[in-house]
Structures are given as C-alpha cells and as structure tokens.
Length: 315
Image (cartoon, rainbow, N blue to C red; front, side, top):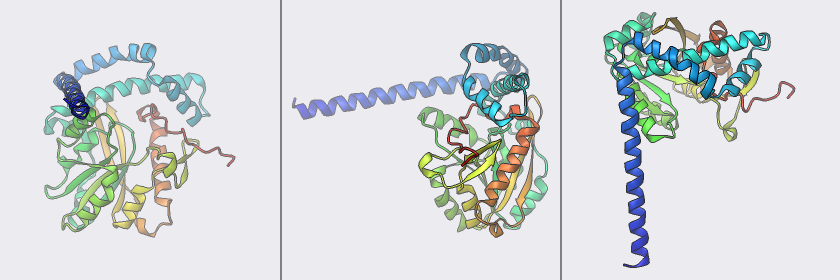
C-alpha cells in the first residue's frame, strides 16, 4: 500500500472515530436530559436545592465573573447584599437548567399553564393586520420557555428565534430540537438577513425573537451604550433588521410568579422604530432590560462575561 493510500486510510479512520465519539456524546447527553424531563417538578426542585451546595461552594462555577459583574453593576450595594443576590442567582440558575430539560417532553397543555403570555389578543391582532414583529428580549428569567410563544399565536403565524449556534454540535442539536418542539423555528444568527428577506416575500406576518444582550466580537464593535453601570459594546443587527424590514418592535417583559411559573407581557419599544435615529432603538432596549434586571437581579445571566469589552467611563 502506498504512502498516499495509508494517509487516506488513516484520515478515514480518524473521521470515523470522531463521528462515533460525537454520536456517543449526543446519546449520553440526550438520554440524561430525557430522564430529567420525566421527573415531576416537585422532585426536580428538591434536586435543585441539593445541587446548589456543591455547585456554589465546591464547583464555584464562574464565581469570580459573577461576583465581579454584580459588584460593578450595583456599586451602591454592600457586599452582604451582593452575596445574597449571588446565591439567589445560582439557585435560580440551577432551577432554570432543570426546567429547561423539561422542554424535551412537557406537554403543550402543561407548559401553557406554567409559561403564560398575558396580552396575546393585541399581538394576534397585529399579526392579523399583517404587521410583522421583532421581539427584543434578554437572558432574563427562563428564556428557553419563551420559545413556547407559538402555542399562543394564530396557526398561520410564523414564529422564529434568532440564536447563536453552539460550538458543541451535540448540544446544539439537542437544544435546537427542544426549542422547536412547540412550533418555534430556530434561525442561526449569521443567516438572519437571508431568512427575513425570504419571509418578506411571504403573505403571512412573522414574529421573530432576538436575544440581543450578548457581546459582539471585538472586531465587530460598532456602538457602545450605557448598561448596568458600564459602557458596553452591543449588537446592532436587531435594530438594523427591524428598521430595514419595517417590523414593529416589542419588548418581552418577564416575571417569575413562583418556582416553575412565569408570565411574559409584550410592550412596544417605540411606536415607529423607522423614525428613530441610528442606535436609539438599541438604547431603548437596554434601558428596558436594565429596569427589569434591577427589579429582580437574580433572574439575569450573570455567568456571562458581558462586560469584558466595556469601555472606561473616562473615554
């Protein structure tokens, strides 16, 4: 056998090994999520209470980032209050992770009881009038459960969520499957404009959710805004797409009623987004999101290194 043939055979075997390893990882994670999804909520929260202690005190998952984020975001709060928020956040973080697993098997009827959207008459009226909608939301509350919005819309409405594809292929496949169970379509961020352009040729109205509070890559920074005591670079694609395609802009206001129960209300960010100067719609979004976070800070995703590219207030 020639050297070229040996090299080709080795590459094929390496590819087979990688694929089998990736498939094994997928089936292990998928099976674990499925098992967790069948556990009753009451038992699930007992498990969450138990997991909190090793997760917070031993694993200390991103504790330094969380403490830094909270301390810098709320300079008016003392260390005792910061620690109280921190512990409540980690408790909620585990709750949400386990709640999200329930999306693998939960029935439409049960999720509608637990994740309620309170002013859907007006939203459905807007869609019936042919108005397409951009929903601005953040990593606040159980954003995974917000993907069930399709259960509350008229059958002919198109509902989608823009998301950033996960690096781990197995987890991306699993999360995408759960997010699309209730009629929501997942659209990769890099294909957003193409997706919206294709929808523009359709006669049906659309509702698209944008979780727009992530940090852009350093080379993609175009604009900074004020958010939680920081001057931060922000994604502006949501504003640009909303204005370009003439969508109405709604903000998703989320409230945790109690463990395992949430409410979401959609309110206008502005009556006429197209009339606004550049970046003002983005500013309005971050102002609304900050107001939400200040009301119940433990519901925000503090493990994300959101302020890594923050600009000094002196600049």
